[in-house]
Image (cartoon, rainbow, N blue to C red; front, side, top):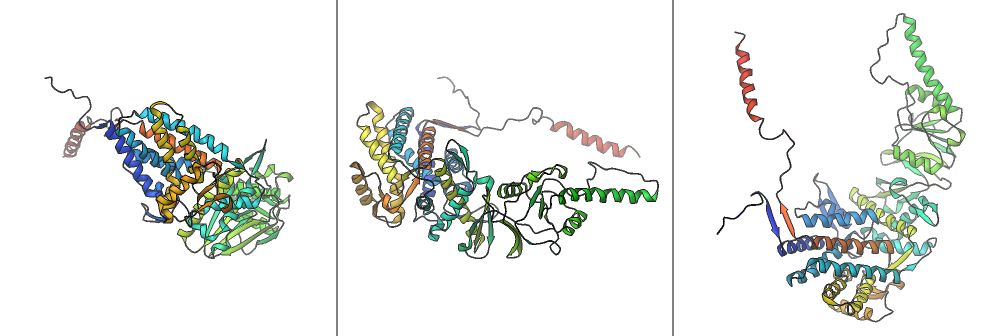
Length: 557
């Protein structure tokens, strides 16, 4: 017998074959089970302690998984899923994971029977194509301008969240905010940039009902000289600057040698005149409010306040852009280049209010603002953070509908319809792919099943009743009412989902499941490559040098 040949280093661990498949499937299932209970209106909240010792209380799938530290590589890729879902469409982060976990779970039996993973993947991809086709068939277009439908839609998205108990409040905020900042690109396309133009300001205190969408911008700043400058201006003329209103210092250290004493005064005078010039260039346009992103010296402040102009300094760049969008101003880089057209006159009111112990500047009542601020009030920090997360989701949903105004039934009805359609289709599929295809059809039922579990109704009975209904054509809109667990028609209950979200969920989940099934080898324990010359060799000469150093100290004697 030959001696065994060692190919891999001892430090490497290698697992291969069905062992890997089972490990991956179990890991993904574990991840899915963590957030399974957060699906639906009767969902539980999770409390996470992050590294800094802060608390996160949430039921947003993505927010939960973001905080988790996982060891298993397959589980890590599951987390990526919910991240992509969050970035792409902003909602459905929980369903993606539950669905992917279920897809892998049903594949386990086939792997036990020695099916080849590529066969399973092929069947899954076929199922995905067919399910998207079914979605196209049952989707119904809506009118974006019809506020009631939009409200129903956003509400069913938030119904599963913690703020669902506040009724229309968050839905209203989300729709107001997204319709405000929507920009028509022409050709019927709408671009809604939530991140850039909608700012969410959380101010603890007050009640949630006090939250509102401002027709304009609010910033956490006070005017530079509170006593002298006006704090409330009607129809202000606003100038936005991107340059410091103070004397320019040299780039590096500048030494000036002055021969006579008078030169010193001349120097000071030049500085003063420079600033006065700057201010005069600005005051030419009779603004009421000057806002700069950089500093504002005392002298400039004096000139401005003498002219009755309020000034705000050191504003964030993003905030400045928002103000520009809201009141129609242009951010100017040098005061010399100011033009009449750069001045924002779109705002109706500038005023400064005090909330708690902070001052906030409001630029509100804008005519046709393209940016807005959502002001959230609430009792505690945690509550506000959760409300903000929910608002993000709601705004994403509203944005998706503005982009692609098609609806699907919520409450697990879509999944059941897809499942029933795939089951019917599976009878016409030949060969070995038929069984995994059928299993994929069954896997779609994970969503309604989880909904039923979270309501606490008899799961088996509910599921059989639902399957029976969906087996007959014409009941596409029958699903579970997540609050009561009853089987109802989703059209009547106004439980909708947006088409973008559902399609993305299915695609992401199935593609991820295929990817994880295709892994048949995990090699772990790979060392990091060392940079050349940073190896363990140079440690010897050091010792000699230290020895030399000792000798040197002895020499001077």
